[in-house]
Length: 206
Image (cartoon, rainbow, N blue to C red):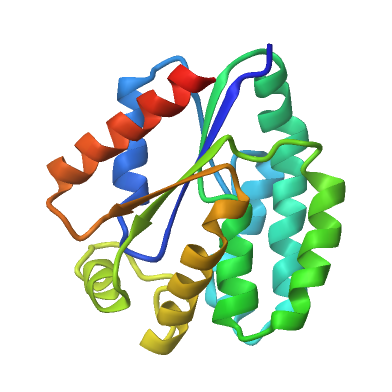
């Protein structure tokens, strides 16, 4: 019996990592990963893409690097886990590529490239549900810059970029399983309660 796959999505500063850490504790038997990341290759891709080394990279190359990391993540981790009946949670997945590279970078023509490559690499591993932690660019970016960690090159994009990302996330979230949109500007405990209810509803159906 196939396992259950939930993707956590949201713009910068939406609280995905914080919620993900709580989900790890709440569901210790789940397979928790991030995209890009989750494999040795994926972590190398992540480090490269988040750093200033790739500032000015061609958007097609940027998209293909994300897709390469995702191909390895699906093949090495997600598909085997789902085939074994496990519960998989990913901090970001395919929706982020549409939001960031197609909408954020204002390259609508790349949607066909994304769709074509995704058909080959996902191997049927689309999320059963996507939980979108929705936050305004102003709030999200303010949160990011209040952290002690050094911001990534995506964190440092202009507000207009983050507004376009939010538009892409909300417009396409329904293409990646059941769409669950949660107001992530609420207090953390309220957001967490809503996420727990959402996850339970998905697991019950599965």
